[in-house]
Image (tube, rainbow, N blue to C red; front, side):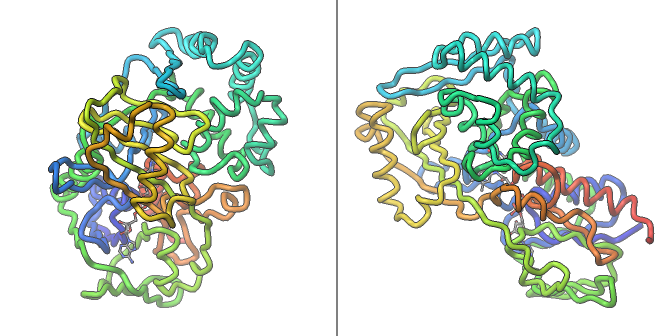
Length: 427
Ligand SMILES: Cc1cc2nc3c(=O)[nH]c(=O)nc-3n(C[C@H](O)[C@H](O)[C@H](O)COP(=O)(O)OP(=O)(O)OC[C@H]3O[C@@H](n4cnc5c(N)ncnc54)[C@H](O)[C@@H]3O)c2cc1C
C-alpha cells in the first residue's frame, strides 16, 4: 500500500484524500488551521447560534466534479435541486423582473425564458440568444488573446445585454470585471453552464451550511477510511533529495518515508516552503465581501435576487437573515466594518426603501484573497498537477484545471492529483 502525504485541508486537499483513500492508499493530511475546508467554511454566530457560511457559495448544475465528490462522501442529498430555474432581478423601489426557465424541452426552455424577460429589448435578446447558440460550437483557441469586454464587443452584444446578463455572469463566475477576465476561460465556463447538460445553468443551493455539506461528511468519510488528519499543524519546509521529496517539516514534527506528496495550499503560501522550482508563483488576487443582515420583517420571498448596476451583486434570502454578496470587492477591503455597513445600507435603500430601519444586526465577512484574477496572462501560467519533482504533485483551485477558482475547480484539482498518484509510473 502506497503512503501519501497531503498538505492543505481545503476542498482540493479533501478531494485528493477522498479519492486516494477510496482507492486503498494510505493517506495522511496536514492542515495549518484548526479546521478543514479552507475558503469553504462556516462558523457559529455566538449571538444567534446559527452556523453561518464565510459567504454564499453558488453551486451550478454543471458542477459535475462537485456532484461526484458529494456522492462519494454521501452528501449529495444536502443540495437542493430546483425543478426549474428562476432568477429575480431586483430593481430600485423593490421592482422585480423574473427570468424563468421551465424544467422541460431543453434548450428551447432557455430560449423561451430569455424571450420573455422584459428587462431587455428584442434586439438585445436576439443578439444574446444567437451568441449563446454560437458559443456551443466555438473554438476557444480563436479568442485566446481577448478579454471578455473585447469579445462581447466583437460579437455585437448590446450595452443592455452586457449590463443585465454578461457582466452579472462574468463577475459572479470569474470574480473579476469583463475588462480583466479572459474571454477564453469565460467561454469554457459558458459552454459548461449552457451546453454541458440540461441542468447546467441551475443554481444548486445547500440545504444547510457549507460545513454541513462539504466538510463534515468528508471528514467522516476520511476517518472511516483510516486517513490520519493533523489539524493546527503548519508545514514549514519541504526537504528534497535530488528530484524527490525526502521529508516534510511542520511546526510540530517531521514526516518522511512517504511515497508521494500532494501540495494543496494556495499559491501565495507556497513561497514559504522553500521549493526552488515552485518560486515566483505570483497571481493577482480578487476579494469577495459578504454582509449578513438580520431584518425586522424580511421583505424577500424568493431564494435569491441579482441586482443590476449596483455595488451589491446578489441578495440571498435565508429566512431569518439575508446574505449580501459582492464579488470583485477590492474597494471594500480597506474600509472599516462600520463604513462598509453604512455604504451597503445606503445602496440598499434605493432598492428597498426603508431598508436601514429594518436592520437588527449585521455580520461582515471580508475574504481578501478569495480567488486569483483569471486574466489572459494568468491562465497561461497556471501550473499542472505534475511537477519537476518526481513524487510531488500540486492541487488547488489555482492550478491548471481549465476552470476558474471555484469549488468545482478545487475538487477537480484534487481528483486529478489523486489520479496522477494512482497512475504513477516512473519516467
Ligand atoms: C467568500 C467566497 C465566496 C466564494 N464563492 C464561490 C461560489 O459561489 N462558487 C464557487 O464555486 N466557489 C466559490 N468560492 C471559491 C471556493 O471557495 C474556492 O475556490 C475553494 O474553496 C478553494 O479550495 P482550495 O482547496 O483550492 O484552497 P483553500 O480553500 O485555500 O485551501 C487551502 C488549505 O491549505 C491550508 N494551508 C495553507 N498553508 C498551509 C501550510 N503551510 N501547511 C498546511 N496547510 C496549509 C489552508 O489553511 C487551507 O485550509 C468562494 C470563495 C470565497 C472565499
